[in-house]
Length: 175
Image 1 (cartoon, helix red, strand yellow):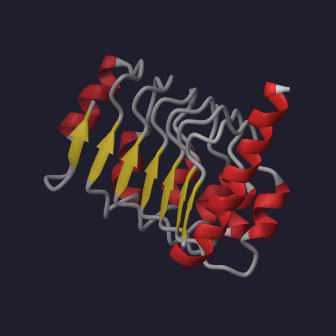
Image 2 (spheres, rainbow, N blue to C red; image 1 turned 135 degrees about the vertical axis):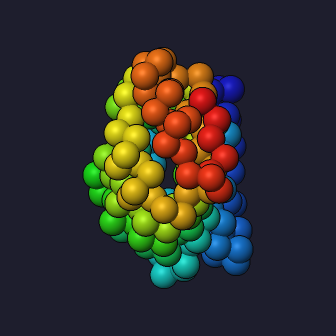
């Protein structure tokens, strides 16, 4: 019976947070023990503008692609502390996005979609499995980038050197 009660509390928590998001524009589904994003979430906040989304501290393995379609005006995405393996190409069309926290996931390849986020100013991908980054493309594609954290990744030494040597003056780089 305790599993059923816990599941019921989890559903109630998600519904309450969706209701709060209608007022605040901030969909905070962090620490909800989510393994995936149910369509019911999108139905609950239909026709409301969501500008910030947090799915931090869950057990999600896949990035919810519908985020890009359902939250087109989102500026902040926090997906830290999940088990997400990749950020899909669809994210590249999210033109209003200014900050991504994708720390402590299982991302093994630097997401190409990020190169299309021309308004991005903050990117945290620390604690993933990334070995390589197209440094030139990173710095030319994202001229507004103010802070990037790639620490705790198995980055190759030559990539770390290029990141440091080619870094724009205004950029706060953590490797």
